[in-house]
Length: 184
Image (cartoon, rainbow, N blue to C red; front, side):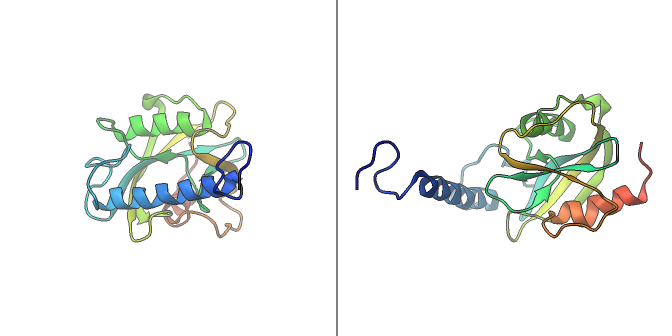
C-alpha cells in the first residue's frame, strides 16, 4: 500500500506515534532499571538513588480558590503535579523551576519556592518503582498552558472527592499534607 505522506507500512500515522511511544516507554524502563547500560535525560545517579527509586522534584501550584494544578503527561493516564527528573548537576529546586517552565510555561524563582518535604510513593508510570520527590509550593502568579510532554492540565479541588486517576504521590502523600497544613 502506498500513500502520499506518512509511512506506507502503517494504516495511519497514529500507529506510528503509538509504536514510537511504546518503544520509548520500554527504553525508559530499561534505562531507569539499569538494564542495557546508558543513561537518558535526567536518569542517572542523581535520578535513581537506589535500586527501584526514582528521584524527582514536583511543585504545588494553587489558584485563588485553593485548587491544585495537575498535569497528565503524554502516553500516561495519571494526573500528577508538574515536575520531573533532574538533569546532571541540578539541585531539587532548580529541577522544579526548569520542569514547571517546560511543562506549564511558568517562570518560577528558586528563592520563592517553599519546601513541603521529601515524600515517597509508588511511581505512577513505572511499574515496580517508587518515586522520591522533593515537593515545593509556589504562588501561582501567571496563566498556565500545556507545554513539553504534557497532554492535559486539570485543576483539582483538594477538599472535594478525589478522582480515581491521580498519581499515588499526589493522592497518598501530597494532598493529605496540604489538608493538614494551612495555606501560605
